[in-house]
Length: 303
Image 1 (cartoon, rainbow, N blue to C red):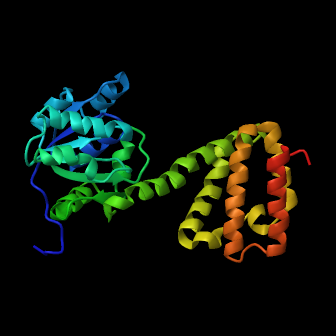
Image 2 (image 1 turned 135 degrees about the vertical axis):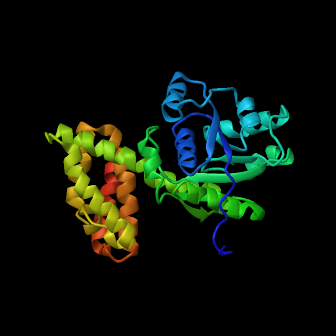
Image 3 (image 1 turned 180 degrees about the horizontal axis):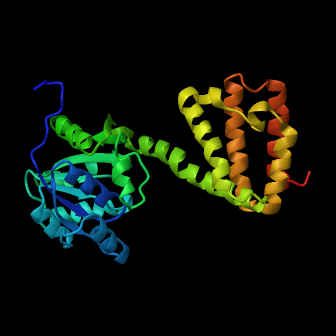
């Protein structure tokens, strides 16, 4: 075996604590790689139905029993619930020595698993950098998906192997950089959904029958250009310094979607700063543009 290649882990009994959108999809991906889902826990009716759909014939049991049955446990609960869950499982003696305990939070590294590590668990932080729907399509989308991985040195090969088996690409994130890493992903992905939804609503109000069809090619090209070229891909009235057009935009937004004004102004200022710094926006035009943005923010757009 090539020593530079990750070793294929032994076939593992897999358990899921928290049948939200992420856990069942990862369990299914591991199942396709030859591992065996043996138990899942879920509380809400939605999570119970999702577990039944994504992991049929896998018993629904309490979290402590998931740990009793599984060699590899996926802790796929909301970020704020993770520390207390880990502490509770460790305090009740549910954690077994040698058990792989994996959380999927982007915010945390492995330190949040310290109570379980002291009980003998092997801690891994494997965060898929993808949005999940809670359906079968998630398993397919894992192919080529980057995972933010944090693990002790002695578990790096195991972490890498598990990610690769799920179809993903491991990207190593230092423990101290996890919050910044997660903030970067949220800034791009979560806010993008908000921006696209607002844009579709405004297009519909403007009379566009199929906003999604209109935006699809435009946003696809914009995303591709941004990923390839970064700030060089900036375009539009802000990057050009068209102060009058921006003022008209703000005026229309105040009439039709006042809740979108603050976001538009914030993004316009950020775009102007980046375009100016990279020589795309002429200083003399930037002055007029930033003046418009300051005025519309201070006087409610009544200029």
